Image 1 (cartoon, rainbow, N blue to C red):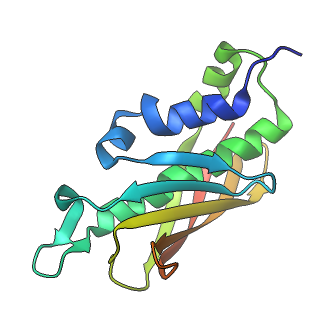
Image 2 (cartoon, rainbow, N blue to C red):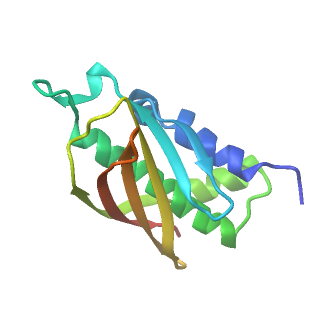
Length: 152
């Protein structure tokens, strides 16, 4: 085994290598020992959907949920096929894509920052399913979703 840091590689993908994630300002990607993935997004004026009320755009919410669900799906794959090099990681990560996603918007996107989390429900040889939640800075659940990702 090498000293390749798989978790650091996942964080690098989520925060820096995908240009759209940089536009959203996704940061502080963390992966807990129990496998829960979390990503933070801060409220910015250019991410507002309802200008009259200052609510976060639903597309920002769904995109953030998709990213956190995708990182959780990657964790499910890594649990089976631990990469030992950056090339191995790139090979594994490049196979992952969203097949389907459902988002239930429960409350307006009000807050100064938001925390998205995801856990893997099941990882198979070809498909992973995740459960995601999107909370504001007060801990209020704003949206919840499930995602299905191709992983093989």
